[in-house]
Image (cartoon, rainbow, N blue to C red; front, side):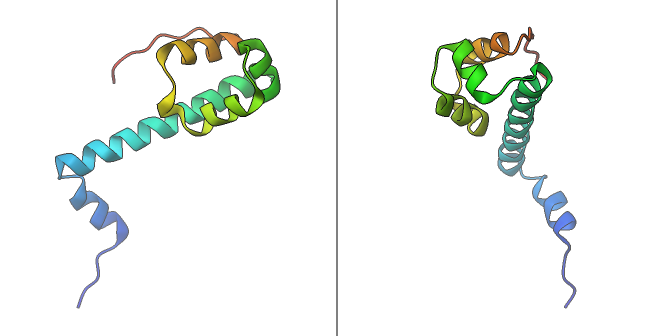
Length: 92
């Protein structure tokens, strides 16, 4: 019996539109989380400093960075401004 590698299983699974949609959504979420952390790091700010600039409590910023899917566009914009970032959303 020949076993498939994880890469082979993933490649085959990516042919399924439902699997691919979930996978793509997860990748997008990870990119957004990394982007938020990058903005804050580049600004040289702590999460407490970002929270203060946004007018929220520090745990709120931590939750935003860990669960970015719950952020509204307005909240994302406020976070970016707190970090001194301007951005434009585009479909990829």
